[in-house]
Amino acid sequence: MLNILGSPQRACDGWTRRQMLQAGGAGLLGLSLPKLLAAEANQPASAARAKNVIFLFLFGGPSQLETFDLKPDAPSTIRGPFQPIASRTPGLKICEMMPQLAAVSDKFCVIRTMTHQYNDHSSGAHYIQTGRPWQVPLGGGFNATEKDWPTFGSVVDYLDERTPSAAKRDMPGFVYLPNRLGHLQTYSSRLDRPGQYAGWLGRGYDPLATAIRKRSDTDNPFYRDCTDEELDFSIQGLSLNEGLSLDRLQQRRSLVEEFDVVRRAVDTSRPETAYDQFRQRALSLVSSEKVRTALDIRRESAATRDRYGRHLFGQSTLLARRLVEAGTRFVTVAWDAPDGYSWDSHTHSDDVKKHLIPGLDQSLSALLVDLDERGLLDETLVVCLGEMGRSPKANANWGRNHWSMLFPAVVAGAGVHGGMVYGTTDKDAGYALDHSTSPEDLAATIFERLGIDPEQRIFDAQRRPVPLVEGGHVIRDILS
Image 1 (tube, rainbow, N blue to C red):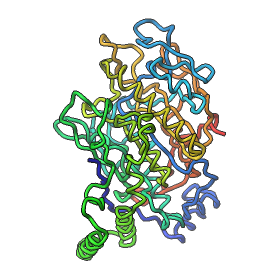
Image 2 (cartoon, one colour):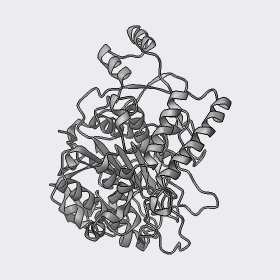
Image 3 (cartoon, rainbow, N blue to C red):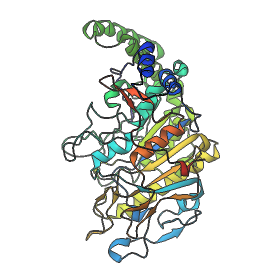
Image 4 (cartoon, rainbow, N blue to C red):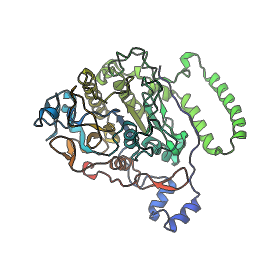
């Protein structure tokens, strides 16, 4: 059973209009007057090409040599077990296990030259989902902290809350599917990976997330298949057909309001207006027929569900399309697995060949075609990547180790040029020869497509104005 999780907490309030104008006029924020006014009003500084974003996060790190950067002429210890096939994109030969993506490559751009120096899952997960390095040193931890930089969706939700249209929103602004990243893992203690939360921005901007129970059968991870019972994307305990009437919901609202009176008396540090805003928003969402309808994946035809794949990633990707179609601004779909590894293929098991690569091929191609057929691809930015790649030299079991120096990203929609390859790599797919692309560059591009100035300032936990992106540049060459 999948249920919505959310915990509205403290948010960072900004300066007053007078303080903003005084600081800007004194040159303290490094903003021109137009940018200052845009920041104060939280309005986009440029026209938005994307209304929403679907961010497919392939946790564990897929191998570039087994997906979008095959090197058939490399030595046998490097080139990998799969053969390349032609695609509809000149110069792009991809894995023979991805024929559906090859057939629709004119709809997406492959950035072959993503790179960073954080060769660790948690550090990489934070960096890729926020555009900022994790403040925890390598090896210093695995779990999210309140000091983390806010994830993309949380920033978008935060800025959207400060626009005139915020009161009219009837869908959650940011949703994380199908689970908090790390919550499926079967270690002795559950992991809670960084990069998926609002961090210092405040827990009120954490994503609404679905939650799936761990399977007892670890021999059949969710990336193989799922039953409809496991894929009930409803708000657990709040479905009207489970006996919760609107009258009972209103009674529950009254109990919450009574509790709030006591809570405010104790917690005088919480901004009352912000908390009221979050509470009202949460109540409206759980009682919304539109939200329940969007989460009901069984409304899709059997053919459409088969098209995306009857596994957890495929059905979650389909749900992401349903959510953005209904009005959600940012949806992240994380590829996680009960074994804790997913794409972390130190051992090249049959799962890579039989499930992981074919599952990605099926779900990503289905999403792009589906969005295009519905007229949504022009206004939806699709980003698909892992937090790292894999080492060029394979180990004895034909697995590959961590390699953050080079890995691919697939980007599509919202004015991204389809049928394009960006960046050239060396003969072993180990390093970029040109157009090295950082997580900051990717972050700047995502914000720019949404009409948000990447240099716009928000206020951190110490009330200091900080830019959304620092040191990154919009990847103009891939955009129209």
